[in-house]
Every structure is written in C-alpha cells, then in structure tokens.
Amino acid sequence: MKDLIHSIFNIFRWVGKFLTGFRILTLNLAFLVLLFFIFTSLSSYSPQKEVKISTNGALVLSLSGDIVEEKQAIDPVSSVLNDKLGLNTGPTETLFQDILDSIAEATIDDKVTFILLDLSELGTVGLNQLQIIGKALTEFKGSGKKIIAAEDFYQQKAYYLASFADEIYLNPMGAVDLHGLGAYRLYFKDALNRLKINYHIFRVGTFKSAMEPIMRNSMSDEARSQNLTWLTALWDTVVTDITRERKLSKESLRTYTENIASELASVNGDTAQLALETKLVDGLKTREELRSYLIELTGKDSTGNFKQIALNDYLKTIPHSFIDPPAAEGSIGIIIAQGTILNGEQPIGVIGGDSLGEMIREAREDSNINALVLRINSGGGSVFASEVIRQEILEYKKSGKPLVVSMGSMAASGGYWIAADADKIWASPVTLTGSIGIFAAIPTFEKSLSELGIYNDGVGTTSLAAALDLTQPLSPPLKESIQISLHHGYDQFLGIVAKGRSMSREEVALAAEGRVFDGATAQRLGLVDELGTMEDAIDSAAALAGLEDYSASYIRKPLTVKDEILQLFSGTISGWLSSAGVPQSLLTAFSRLLTPIRQILFFNDPKGLYAHCLLNDLSL
Image 1 (spheres, rainbow, N blue to C red):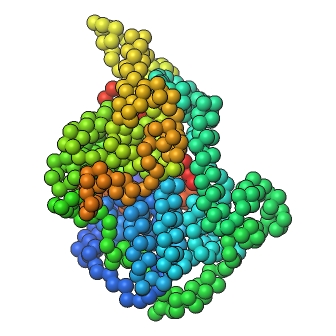
Image 2: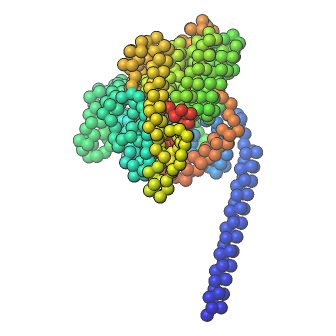
Image 3: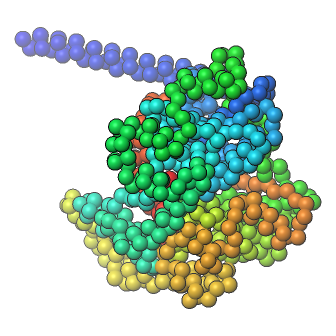
C-alpha cells in the first residue's frame, strides 16, 4: 500500500512538473511572439502618413474622451495594437484647441458640407469649454452651413453642445438626460476610524472644505451653502444657453427636470417621445433612418455609407494654432498649467513647481517673447510649489514683459496663488476660482499598529526628537507649531492677493476663508479683471506689450524618457481596459472613489501645507 501511494504521488508530481513547465514555456513563447509583433508593427508604423481629403462630405466632429488643454504624448504601442488588431478604443483625450481649429477651418472649407456632432464618447469637459465650442459652432452656422446632432442617448453635457445644432435627432429607444448640476463626494471619517488611522487636520478658512472627506461623514453647512451658490449660477447659465438655442421657455426645461416622473407618465414612459414633445429634439430616427437621411445630404461613398470626413483625418490636413516657434518681430508665449500643483518636476497633466518654473524662466530669457499668457486650469495643491512658481513669476515681471492669466474651468486655491500677481486676470463667467485658504493633513497610525499588538517607545533629547514619526501621536508642541505655521501661510496668501490685486487685506479677507466663486462673481469682487477666452487674454497681453502685429506660441516642457515610458504603459493599459469591455460606469465610480485618496497620497509639500480645492469632480 505504501508503494502504491508513493507511486501515485510520483505520478501527480510528474504531471504537476509537466504542467508547470508547459505553462512557463507557453507564456515565454507568447511573450516572444508579442515582442516580435510589437517590433515589426512599430517598424512599419508611420505616424507621419500623409492624409488627403479627396471628397466633399460631413465633418464628423467626434469629441472622444476628456477635453484637455494640453494633451499627453501619443502612445505608439496602443496606436499600433489598435490599428493591427482592429481595436477601436478611440482617444482618451481630445485637445480643446484642436476642436476649435477644426471648426474654424471647416467654416471656410468647401469640402465640408455640414458638421455632424458625435458626442457619444464625450468624457470630462468644463462648462467654459463647452461654451466656447458652442460659440465656434454658432460662427460656423453663420457661413450658411448647418450642424446636425444625432445620438442614441444624450448625456447632459452632450445635449448642452447638441443644443447649438440646427437639427437634433434621437434614437426612438433613446433619451435626453437633463438633471441639473451637483457636487458630491465620498466621505471617509468612519472608515478611517475603523482602520484606527488618526488624521490630524489643520486648516484656516471657515469654507475651506478640501479636507472634509476625511474629517466628516457629510458635507458641512458652510460648504453646502457656498457650493449651492455657485452651482446655481452655473446651472442658470446652462438653462439660459439651452433655452436660447432651442427657443424654449425656461419653465419647460424646469418642468422636464423637476417633474420627470409625471412628464414620463403622460407619454406612457416613452423617454424619446417626451424629448420630442418637449422640443428638445427635432425628430426620432433609427440608425438606418439616420444613415439614409445623411446619404440624401451627401451621397454615398465607396462603402455605401454617407460621405464623411473623420476628425482625426481632418486635423492632419489643417493648420494648428500656437505651434509655430516664437517670431522675432513679436510673439506672445502661452504656457498651459493644468492639474494638481506638486513639488518638483512633474509630467503633463500635473503642475510641477520646478517644471512650470523652468518654462516661465524660458519665457523670460527668450528675446522673441514679448509677453506671456499663463493658462491655468487647476484646483491648487502644494503651497511650497505654488510659491516657487510665484517667485519665478516675480522674476519674470522684473523683465518688464507683461504677464496675463487666462483661467480655464478652475483656477482656485494654489491656482489662484500663482495667478494673483498677473498684470491682468481673465476668466470665463463659469470659471470656479477663489478658495483662498490653506490646510495641512497628517495621518498617524499608532492606533492601527496597537490593534496588531505593535507599539512605539523610546527616548529623545527634545520634545520634538521623534519629529513626524507616523507610528506615534503628534506631540502637543508639534501640533501647535503646525497651526502657527498654517496661520502664517494664510496671512501670506492674503498678503499676496492684496498686493497682486491692489486690494486691502480687509477686502481680500471678505472673499477668503476658502470661499469658491464663479467667474462673474469673482470679477465683481475684484479677484478677476475681465471675462473672456484665452484668445481675449492673448490680445490683452499684446496690447500691454504694445504689439500690433504678433503671433502666439506654446511654450512646452520636453518629455523625459521616464515621462514617455509612463505614458506609453498608461496608454496601453487604458486601451486594453477599453477593449476588454470594462464598463465605463465602473471605471468612473472606481476613479471617483480613488480621487480624493490619490490626491492626498501624492501630495509632496515639504512643509505639509496645501492650498487645494477639491471641486474637480464637478460633472456636467
């Protein structure tokens, strides 16, 4: 019996070894094949392939992914894999300026007969960006060409843009989602308590709510009040624009959003019919009916579809704004400051104190640049990094060259810290700005460790000898010193704004304590000079520099090898997730859960002080 058991055991052991070896061999072969495939694909890939538009047709304005001010580098691996394998994952980002350039060119291009809006994959986009795109579409219609919007389902942000079209069509099984604006967050206080994490919060500003997700389980009354104020202002803008473009009454839109249940009951639950009867859309068309209609307008192409020009192809044939190097006769430099402000060198999509400072220094030292426009789209971040950037701005101003700030969707907290010393500040009416406040957040884990039976003990020569040892509580002298430092930082913030904006400290204090304002309100308070676009800011900078004939050029940080590798792999993973069919709603929810934690984890201010506004999660 013993020999039998031993023999059976040897058989299983041999089978296990065989399966393990076979698995390793198979994986290695697959890896080698993949490497060979990527190598051969990349060697035959030509990103500079010339594109010619040889037929007249509809420009399909596909706004895919997030609309960004500065786009990350193209990931060649993802591009090749998508192309070779036929994976139509689409871009994860669309450059805002590319959209404007394509519409402007299409306005005067005889090959473009009309614009077809494709908004089904529209990602994160600012209301100010939508307004500017809408203005460009209005100018396009002024050329006598029309715009058609056609979707199976309209998200709220997509419908806002669709409202600028001459004709809006909806699938008979579709719907128009108009639900208003909201600012909602996840709160972690109880979770942190259960994990025994002792978070030490220091802040100045009654309305400074950036740390509320880890301090509370719900929104404070102060945050609720101020959020509702600017949300109402932005929603009024949305309603005004939609009702103007669709020639509807505001009451009809209010009824649609506030009484959706009774309105649906009146059409037996048919969401598409309700949109038609409310005149949100001009007609209901199936996909085949829509295709036939578009063929009537353009004729058939070689595949039997309507004649069309893809946005990505069109962008390869048209001139692009602000990409030429600075001209000797007079140029305006443009720097994009987009994302959370962190210390040191940072990649595109994050504002690095050092990396942005280097670009400002480049503008100062370049004799061909006569003025600078700093385009800010940021909720802030590190106080130290913000001050490093501001110090570089002050050095720039010593050169005598004008500096104009153009605010995007948001320029708050640290974003306002770096804006305050500009010669002129431009914002859109729906920009979120202000949030003049400061905080520090330090977690300690002594309670978490004690639950595991782990304790910290020892001796030191002073009461501060342990410093910021996160395995033990903060000492009272350390807590007091942090709070004193915090008040100093807040006073410094008030002083910077008062001096930069030529306001008294009392005036600044009334607009401070973390309050957030829409652009129109900020202008009335003196925090913003003018309301307008980045183009308006460029013209303003040229006027301050005394230029009549001028050009404008981007100043961009060259990518490091590390940046390119990170972008390559992040793009590849993103493409694989999309092709694997991971629901976008799941990815969005997961991102929403991680956003506040991720931002806190990557904070790297050397003093632990932050001027940050967590309103980036506003979704239209």
